[in-house]
Image 1 (cartoon, chains in turn green, brown):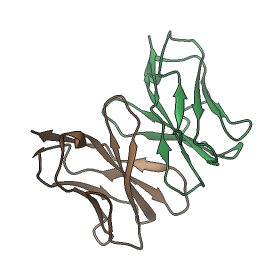
Image 2 (tube, rainbow over the protein chains, first blue to last red):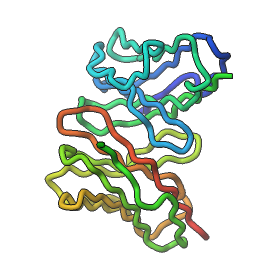
Image 3 (cartoon, rainbow over the protein chains, first blue to last red):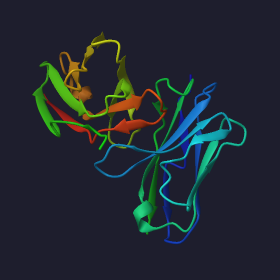
Length: 113
Length: 112
């Protein structure tokens, strides 16, 4: 079946702008995760959804970052007033349940100029 | 602090040889460990996992070994192929959590 998909694959924006990144999890997966990966680093956890609710948002760096999953499937990561330091690859993963293997999407490369 | 780290940042092997990638973890509360492979421009791809009640698990050409005494994890790849060239990450998931904690990664280069 189809894996995790993310759009757009690349996003270039200017400092101070607002961006939305989308994640379509594997069908039937109830858990969804967002991670951020900087060049040469491993992915870092941002937020975890179980169904529609954010069960753990302890990895969000500040209040400019927000994520939603209104119907328990597609999720959107929203970044306000982007800064150059937000430039990274944003990865989404899903799993059948909260503690099962996480399957990753291809990521969205965000570049803030 | 709590961290998952790798001993060797870069590993070069000859095609056909076996590869061993090592990982150390520090959180004794971790009970689930995963190896991911990441190729350039792609997301991490699941390779194999192991739970803390096991010390060895085998897949197709890959074996993961877990030594809880010294908090060490390794990935063995048999008959390494050029397509195995990538960055390999180990990650831990803690018993009471849902987030993966990744190490920095090891670059595997396979020479033909």
